[in-house]
Length: 239
Image 1 (cartoon, one colour):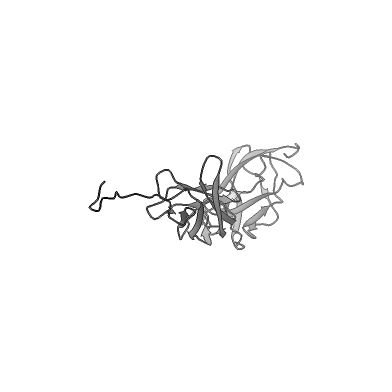
Image 2: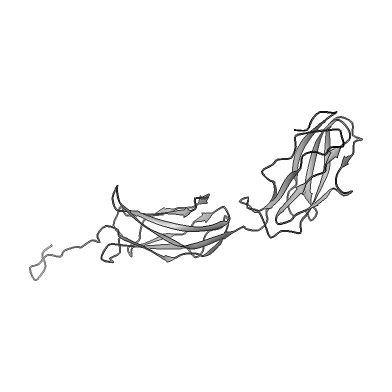
């Protein structure tokens, strides 16, 4: 529009994104929890002007790739800052965050953060490890195959700091067969202790052909029990 001095105002916009900077980034977090402080990335053009025009955006990703939740792509505000306020990383480990802005279809600019350590959250439940408990067994002196039980957080991360939880295994139901069988194990109480978040359950046997439902509980009743079934065959080979 014309002005009093006869000149028109000129609106000057920032150029294309050329510089990204992490202005705020967490160094430590808990698995499954929102990262704090929130990640803030400044986006600037080649002259240092904040880039805030419509169509500009910054995407984040974790290095190495991992399971995440939240909004990992956002647009800058009027000051050229992109704020990520609901980021979650679900797996414990050491990561870096990479911020990327696309200048064109063939060109992008990116920056990598300092290291971010994600620790397991509070112990939440029991879980079978990679090797599930046996589905079948046999009546013999040879015990069933061993399996592992983990103490994990809500996202499934192993609580390596736990070396005190005691687990006990018991027959909760006899689904088929006589009810006078005996579950034998490496000790009279059928108890197993967690070491670095993991207990190895081994040395189990049962002396009657049956189909059983077994349960594993912690002695302090902090977690829901794990339940599984085993079919005991007379003289067959364990899976």
